[in-house]
Amino acid sequence: QTHPPGPAPRPRTPLPAPAPPLLGRPPVLPGLRPLESQRIESGAWFAGLSAGLRAAILAEARVQHVKRGARLVERGAVATDWGGVASGALGLATSWRDGRAFTMELLGPGDWYGDIALIDHSPVDLDIVAQVHSTVLMVPLASLQHLLNSQPELRHALLQLDCRRLRHMFRRLEELQTLPLSQRVAIKLQRLLKQFGRPPVMGVVPTQARLIELSLTQGDLAALLCASRQR
Image 1 (cartoon, rainbow, N blue to C red):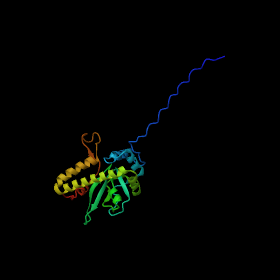
Image 2: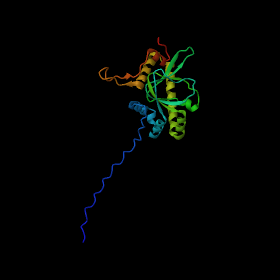
Image 3: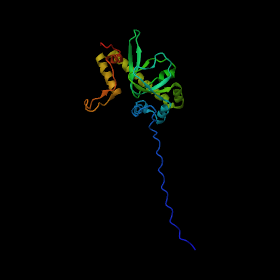
Image 4: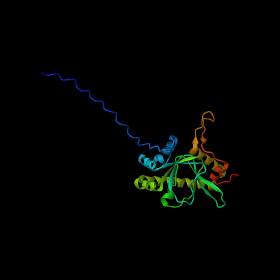
């Protein structure tokens, strides 16, 4: 005796495939706030790197929090780390023979520093001092050497970064030699606004305005301009 065939088995619904990893976004480091991570990622130089190189750099970095006035690097010391600014501001400082100190440049979120002395094995040229409470990423010398050997893209990228710094230095030197102080002040304030500007708190100042997210005294501004406070 034959029996009629039973109902055909229902086809199984395939499980959804796992979401692919976000290759375009570097991992967030422990110790970094979301805004700090965003500022590192969106920095003009870092954002131009491939996703693989960005991830490789962050994998070698450690997070360091520094207080205002802390000296990260001292002029003449042996270079040990390559750094990137996640928040705050670092001053590249030096001093005259009479003891007066001045800040040549400010590094803000997204800026990287310290690679030159590590590559040519020379002493550090400038003091690096925290102007405000800051968060920085530190990549040790051995890790930078590993990255240079394993990531050929990094060599070209650092060369481009150093060319950008050199052009900026030439512009600063030209301004110092040819422009009156009042015009140099205006140019410096525009640069600070571009580097540290942020939208204002609603209702406090006009919405179209931008504020410089950095506290500077008259002496600080004079030092950045290689001028005296009285002038």
